[in-house]
Image (cartoon, rainbow, N blue to C red; front, side, top):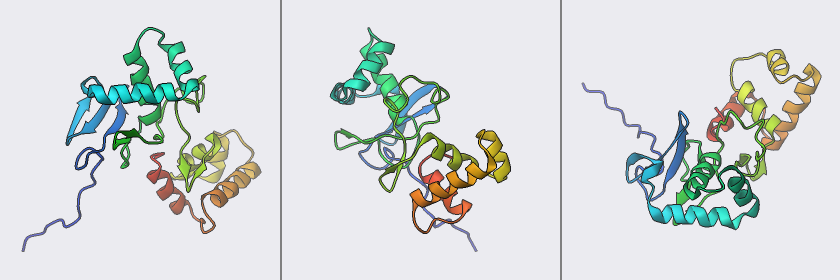
Length: 192
């Protein structure tokens, strides 16, 4: 008797379709295209041009990137791709010559970044944007920490923790009731 795995492996965009998936790993940007993982310096010129157009289409994004990198167009594109699309998920970041909304990326500067919410995007679930508190609640609640520990980590009173958690559950859907359901949503949003 031979055992075979009939379950299909999880594929990322770029491995089996025309989409491109950007992601950051150890402070380096890479992308998946044509079934290969490549360094961002190998990004085709056409995609770089479209990234520049996407940056120019949003004045606040363009101004932020020019402040950081006044003389380097490539550095602006690199930073834009990292901030907006640095998370590795199962949705193409670039497809049909268009950039998508963006990914959640675990940036260590997120809490202190002057351009938080401008370059990076807050994740959405069912069309509703999640706040920084929602994200932190989802990350911590998805693990094995007690509610008291999570409240301490977030520096909020225990009673407030329950109010925030109830509001988050309501935001995520009328049938949302368990930490396990919350963890599945957090995983789907690349938060954990």
